[in-house]
Length: 373
Length: 68
Ligand SMILES: [Cu+2]
Image (cartoon, rainbow over all chains, first blue to last red):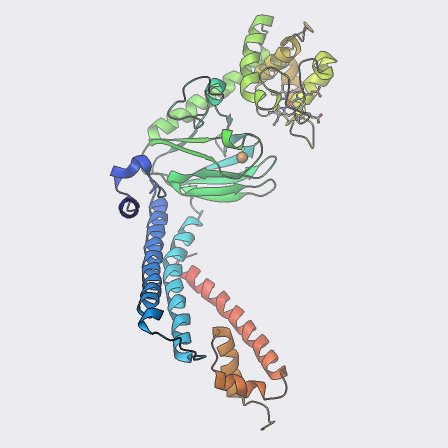
């Protein structure tokens, strides 16, 4: 009886009544016209399946019960009945066409990428996202900010555990926004359930998707294609703002990016570099090389005591700025500012008992960056 | 046992029945006493081609409805 009651509740809850939001099993209804269409499709098809199950299993159980041996039922052994076979072929055919018609209408809408007012290139990296606003001169990376202590169960977990980033994507409300989705290393997938957008991010390909979110708000998603060790640690946060706030954000972000570039000419003290370097290291490098600099097995080398970190400074700068082709050690020249790069390299040369004692100036890195462009 | 080949209409019906997935035992017996399988194979290939063209046209039509 309790099981039956739970099934009933489940069926009710799947009608998306908000009372059950706390233990929701059904897919979310989302916030866009498309996500509503997808949800409605899902529900229609779900109920069609329920009806089919009731009819098929109803007839089956009734037949088993009604024609039981104790009532003297004997098996019929006729061989074919063309009429019945035609009917049980036609009925599923008609049901499938009935589902295909609304599904096709929704799919055609989802694939209509025309007339977007904002174009954003989304690039998956191991393990962060990069957002480039085409024609707006805005380009930044978006990385997880959930503290390591929470991940390691050393601190209580926040409400948005593993769903918090340093720089969220920002888009205007009520405008069609197109995403050009690709990847720099392996296959990722950019997924925001509330928009019903899930697009594979494949190196060398550009997949298109779009959304139009009517209401401002914060929406969260995740990478949906297994992409390595920190696949679960590259969330997506999209902040939808009103047009006026969005315009202000564009201005502020451009100014901040210009300020970061200008900061490359400043000279920092060893202490400043070390403080900044530790911070940068923990967000950009620790996933692989670990907070203690000891690396991870034979996959991610230790930097504590490493030949490169203790040796020639130019080789050290080179591997961090340009990466090493064919390995997980990616080029950081686009991901980090000159100041951040100078700081993190300085940190690696002087942390964990690596006491080389030298420091890198942001200007040196800036020259390399400009040379590369 | 008549060894003359199937009529064109019978051929079409049998191939369509095969596409649909249901054939009566009576027609099956008839088709399998006709000696050669070649007419059925050729008609099957032709019908497959027609089916592919039909699907292409169907997709075009659906997209044109959507204004694409
Ligand atoms: Cu990923």
